[in-house]
Length: 147
Image (cartoon, rainbow, N blue to C red; front, side, top):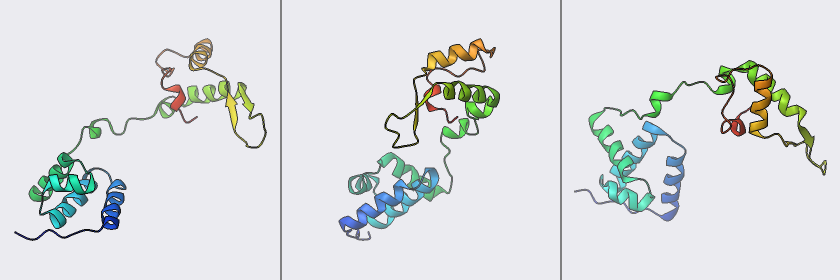
């Protein structure tokens, strides 16, 4: 069995940072390679040293061993358009409604504008303008819109 290589704390932090910059298969592959190199393939040791989830590391090790890449459930919903892309006309009207309720920040030190428009009031105004229930976003969706 190959002797595990000792790591300095700065190296451990660098590997954590590097792994956090990656996603999905790339991250698992990196974690598996570091696990093989520094912990003799022990996902538990990798979890203890780097704080990575051992299930994720184990999956990466299995992908490395078999050459088969596992797909996550996020691939089932990828490509779903955002509400503003699905309904650009409604998004434009919603932007106009919000702009009507905007006010300048009181100190005038920034160019940030605030609105006192609530999601329920925005929905009511969209209904009054004749948009169907399917076109109008949910109240929980409105705060996260990029309009």
